[in-house]
Image 1: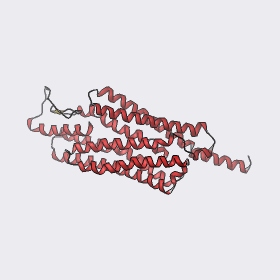
Image 2: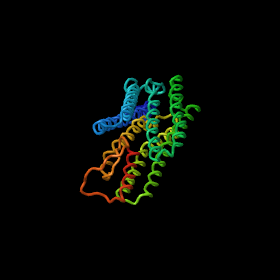
Image 3: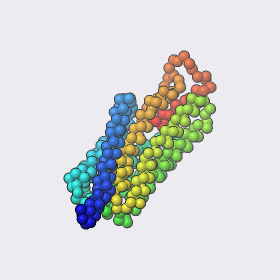
Image 4: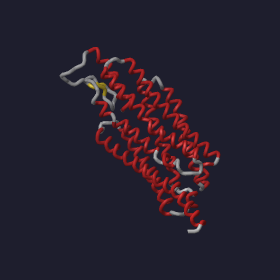
Length: 314
C-alpha cells in the first residue's frame, strides 16, 4: 500500500467513524427509547383504564409523534449508511423527511413541558399561574425556531448550512430555551414540595412528599442532561455530526419522562392513607374500613399528602 492509498484509507476510516458510526449509534438509541416508550404506553393503558379521555389522547398523541420521528430517523440513517454507503459527498445533502425529525422533537418537548407546567399550577392551587404565562412565549419560540431551521435547511439542501450564522444562533437559542424551561420546571416542583413538606409533621405524609420530591428531580434530569450534551457537542464540534447522538433521541426521551410520571401513580397509591384522593379525577374518595386507622388529628395532613401525590402524578 503506497503512501497516497494509505492516507486515503485513513481519511475514509476517520470519516466512517465520525459519520456512519454516529448515525448507527444514534439510530440504536432512538429505537431503544421508542421501544421503552411502547412498553410504558402498553402499561399505562393496561393499568389506568379509568383515566380521563384527554389524558389518554395525550399519551396516544405523544406515542404517534415519537413513532413518526423514529421512522424518519431510521429512514435517514438508512439513506446515509446503506443506500449511499461510501459516498461521502452525499453526507452533505439533506434527506427528506429525515430533517423534519427536528420538528417532531420540538413538538414532543413542548407538549411534555406543557404537562408539567400545568402540574405546577395545580400543585400550587393555581397561585403560580404566572408560570404558564411566562412559559407560553418560550414554547412558541421553540416551535417556530424548529420550523424555521428545518425549512431553511431543506431549501439550502446543504447540511452544513446548519452552521451558518443565522441557523446556528437560532439552534443554540432553541437548545438554551429548552434547557432553561426544563431546569425551571424541576426547581419549581422541588420548591413547591419542599414548602408542603415543612407544613406537615406526619411521618407517612413526609414519606410521600419525599418520594414526590425525588420524582420531581428525576422527571427532568435525563432530558436536561441530554439537552446539555446536545448543546455542547453542537457548539464545540461544528461541522460534525456528534450532536446527533443526543438530538435524535431527546424527543422519545421526553415522552418516556411523561409516561414514567403517569405510571408512578400505582406506586404512590400504595402509600396513601385511609383518607384518600382519587389520583385521576381529584375527587375525594370515601375511606374504606381498615383495622388500623390513623388518629383524627392526622387526617388533615394525610389528606394533604394524598392531594400532593394526586396533583403531581396524575
